[in-house]
Image (cartoon, rainbow, N blue to C red; front, side):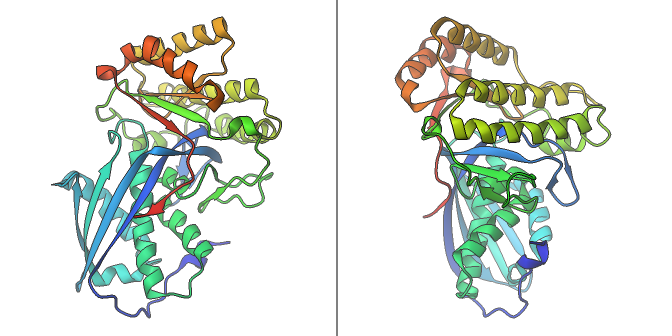
Length: 356
């Protein structure tokens, strides 16, 4: 499929003024996407667990207008700092949803977690907004199928934030073409259709809020530093190999191999940041304390708990549902002290976005 499949018709009926609302989750990548080309296309494939409790709720109010305009509100307060990114998003998607030129929008959004702190708030936010727009398109073109609308929502979300295309469905979503995954695409995220062992059902993820402040370096800037990176070619090949290995792991339930791949991917992501030009470090001292404490606990108890990181200081502690009580007690007693104000969020693999 090519992007032309998502081109919008210029012959739309007019909608009356209205309101649509969607809730979309964040996601946590197991194989990381880092580096892009063209218009928000990935240099390597990735796969993620869709989350459940970490989500964004977005209400899109629209009124007829001669030009596209919008205002963004976060938790009820006008957030003008978000508007340049939304402006870029609307410019990118105009070809695919031409009807946006006929409306002014009020975008009201709220997160169940801190934004701009490495928990993929742009992923949940942009996917929720994309779903609101596709809700409008469904009203304009009722004959569109649900599969098409879901795929196009992922396609549009990607144009706002790459990883947002993995937040539409769940619990496991692949983004990026991979030779062993028939339905994979650089244009949108697709559910992982391979066999998944029961040990990975309802997988748990507790996000430790090490630093709730805004990241020192945005993901957009970080992705750009992969151009000309000395280790980029090897990294992209590694991601393909690790995704192939994970497919086998999901099938046979080899959780020790899962741990090795997921933790290696997390550390590799940050290694690429530390070896780019300019170089930067998003981990904090408490990030390292948490990692070492997890390793010590795993060695002492035989637990299958592990960690992963996104582009930030916060730590995602991942573990099977069968260990939920023990690991959450460990987090409360041993890891919470490394979190800002002792805060963390218990989450688990979810099924994707939903209309409100």
